[in-house]
Length: 227
Image (cartoon, rainbow, N blue to C red):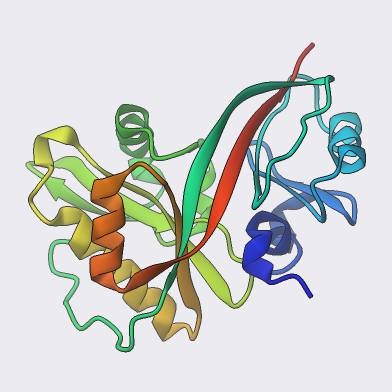
């Protein structure tokens, strides 16, 4: 039987995020203003064609696969990203306090989008914050670093949008925020996981230091439905 983390988007959309899912039983995607991810029960040509049929004009989607996928001609392949999927294997809940960490809400969305545009950790839209638990560190009143939750294929919860402003790299902000994210997930009796480009050596070392281990390779495909 397939492990839920082998297909994390689909299983998020059929479990923890079923309330914000659109589509059919085997082909699902998030509400367009929340995030641009789609999950297919299997990444077959048939299901990619169904996604094309049921989605709005000019839709852009990101979907994940453990193995290479042939993209049907009716889709335009914009890019593919080779990643590692990490799962938390730490033995203890982090004890670091949340001093200096701010819970982010709707009033912070403009700053969050600006930081994401600058650092490119992945797509972030006007209502992505509804995926929950975004936290940040402010320096002189400006957002310097942040992270939050994304996919929730129960009982796993993904840490995502981990980013630090270039002016504040090397200050330990990402480590501090990630400790808080891990703690909050574990206190819910859930298991943290995340994805990172397989060439991002700095981030990989940070995640390993925090207690994450590589679980598998993963490929992200970015596809667009053209007019």
